[in-house]
Length: 193
Image (cartoon, rainbow, N blue to C red; front, side, top):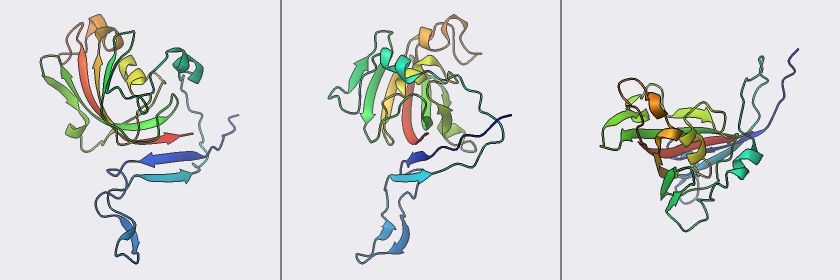
């Protein structure tokens, strides 16, 4: 029988998923709401017990550390190239950093090297940002690697070689065989068990 494990989570929401430009709460002495407009929000929460176990095969923290991923939040470099060919360009930084095992919410736009857009979370307003657990192999390898170290509010460009994307098979008509994919990604939220 499955015995649910109750865990506490810290959830970090960028201003786009929190209170945005209006803020929240009673006006304070200076006329501002308790949570000012355009504020990143952090909340501690405890999820309700699950009735079914989650079936996830995540990458371990040790295997992520073995990949020697750079700490992009503290490095002065705006552009980093990993040994496997993944290129990451920090467009805007924030805080705290994503680790393997975190659940993230990401807005993205994907293009081919010639500039042809093949997908964007902004085109799917009914679904909102993409949600996935980092390292659980639910997205292409370039994403599992490229999101590690991001911070809520950070924007990053991922230039993903074919071996870390869809390789020799491609993906339908939208992504040809052996295509290098370019993603502009924005981390809009994260949750940490």
